Length: 109
Image (cartoon, rainbow, N blue to C red; front, top):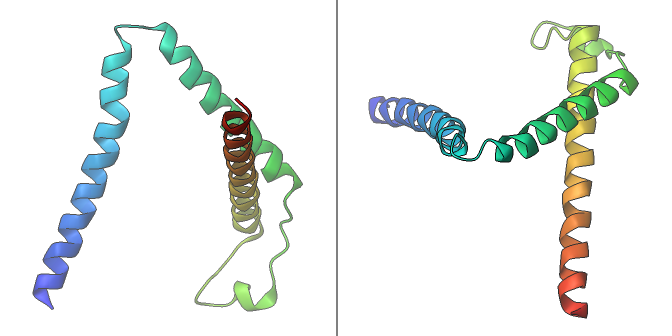
């Protein structure tokens, strides 16, 4: 069991290191061309706006079985989870539509 724990913590460390490098290295590279940061900032702002729209339309209803001890879900937590789910669904649909549109566009050309 100790070997599993060591590799589990090593996996956590690798995920953290990968996330760090995935964020920091493109920022360092974009210092050569600051205009490339504009597209990134617009994308991040778009996702944040989408989340706040999804958060505002999601329900804060909590079923009684989720208010109990193992979950302890609050209405604000339920609304946050609903907002994240709606955001994920919208982004997945946009990605799928983009893939289909790109493939059809390549097939026509």
